[in-house]
Image 1 (cartoon, rainbow, N blue to C red):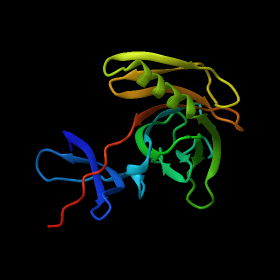
Image 2 (tube, helix red, strand yellow):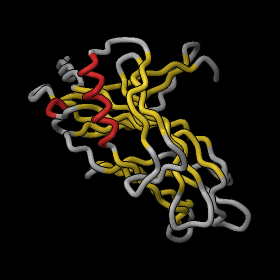
Image 3 (tube, helix red, strand yellow):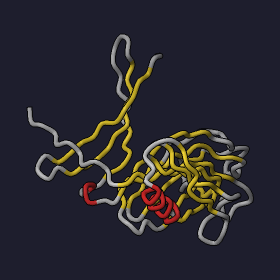
Image 4 (cartoon, rainbow, N blue to C red):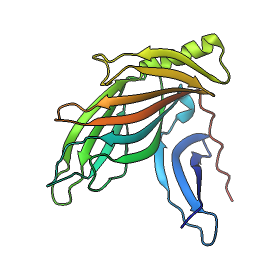
Length: 216
């Protein structure tokens, strides 16, 4: 199957105009139509949020072996009481996910926590390390963007250095790119022999209220 296209499917509560769930979907443009629906985020009162946090889990590098010769890794993301999970990549120590997740948040944002696990069929999943990153610098950069009245183009807003508030392997720049405040990061995984996690986080202020679903 070729020529896949995609987008977002938003399910709303027509009584409160609040967004209940966001799905990511894909379909084939020729022949029969197939749907692959993936939940991105859930919230009852998204319109009350200060903004949207987009997290793109790109890839892992040099992950630890938890099976005989390899691992079946996946990543669990936690922001406050919101949780998401990537797909499992079988038998791979350098997995590529390229999966995007969205969370509706209010300030202060707090910490984005990430845990990597090895999927096991007959016992509990093994831990493969964890990491975290403070999201407040992202919001501070967004406020700077407003002060500078940026509306288009690309502008570097600030640099975040590795410290006790994050698991950064190296300094990371926060950049304004066409309406989004973006930070590309490489995180070291803690409490394991080796492992790195590459990801992108984006902050978008004041999401548009979801359009109610009309009754047929």
